[in-house]
Image (cartoon, rainbow, N blue to C red; front, side):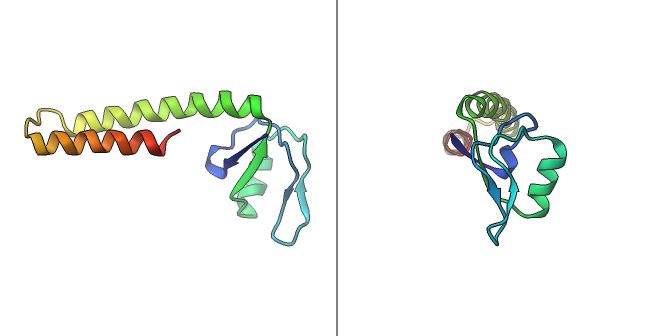
Length: 104
C-alpha cells in the first residue's frame, strides 16, 4: 500500500484503503478501481491523498515522474542555454538538484 497525493491519482489505480470525508463518512471503499468520476468526487471533497495498491503506485508514478522530470530538465537546459558564467552554471546545477528532490 502506498500513500499518494491527489495530483498523482490516475484512472485505473485501485484504492487500498477506504477514502473518508472530514466527518468520517466513507466516500469510496477499498478495492475500488478509480475512474474519472471517482477522481472528481475526491476533488469536490478536497481529499488530499489516498492509499493505493503498491504495485500500481510504483509503476504509474515512476513513469509519470520520469516524464515530468524530463520535461523540467529540458526547460532548465533551455533557460541556461549559452550561459558561460560560473555563478549562473552553479545556479543551474542547484536547479537540477532541487528538481531531483521534488520529483521522486
